[in-house]
Image (tube, rainbow, N blue to C red; front, side, top):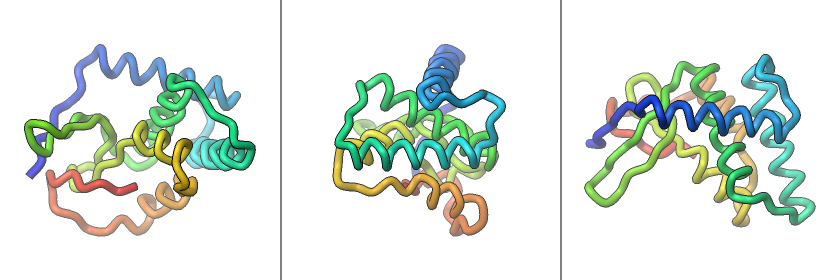
Length: 143
């Protein structure tokens, strides 16, 4: 079973700064609805891939963190650090009972740097209506 830790205030503050950077990158207001933000993230990722464009690492982080915040706002998820074993941990968002985990920073980097299609919107909508049951505190990846 995974060990899950809450993030400290400094880390939460960093995540909020990156969120603001992601909104600025996409020219979106902080008042935008989560579904609209995820739609724009998905469109932007498709555009970048089609154009063969790349982003610097801070912009990739900003988009990933912005994506993670939408799960928090729309679905009641929360940020945390998950330790699966002493050598394997990651920061990301988890559902209420910690059964499911998404590492949005890794996921964004993976989509923008590999042959993986952007499926952020599909995943976001699945979480909204068809999240499969999972075992509490297992923190299974759901990308």
